[in-house]
Length: 210
Ligand SMILES: C[S@@+](CC[C@H](N)C(=O)[O-])C[C@H]1O[C@@H](n2cnc3c(N)ncnc32)[C@H](O)[C@@H]1O
Image (cartoon, rainbow, N blue to C red):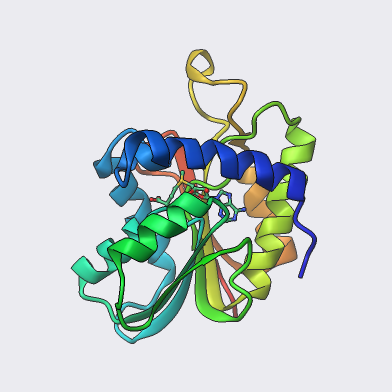
């Protein structure tokens, strides 16, 4: 597996562990402003899947497992694995879905096997004091991992560099959607879509494997 930077992951894990310890299994507990936004992100990410047939999916940075609730509400049949680097997230997720069939939660930075799809919501946002260059290198290593672990495609979201300048924060990473589109086209697949038409300061990238 690619050597995703462990120092970065330690800081990220402690940040999110504090969020869930403060706010519990709620959107605020995974650092989102609202449930509507959390679900809007899931709907964008799930555009990578073919919902008409059962599929396996790895949720990278699963938090307390809210994506699985949403997939179930949509009535889709899945084998689901959620991974997260923050131990309290995995503890909460395991409590919420105890005994559920075809559902696994793991404290890890990689799913460790190939799934039809890998998706990631919100894992590229908080970059602390790392430079754009350092965070981008980490982001690409993580995309390489998602590419290697997906059979049919993967999707992820990022805050957008098209955000209003006066609302941007130094500790957050605002990715250039055009740069990442180009990177995904050249590095992973010819079939790539940017979804940048929903009401959040971010975009979703869909990468289909051919
Ligand atoms: C913004 S929260 C979103 C949680 C969930 N995806 C949701 O939308 O409800 C990001 C989560 O990803 C986890 N995370 C961040 N970077 C990660 C990485 N490289 N690998 C696995 N988990 C990660 C964090 O611990 C946190 O639980």
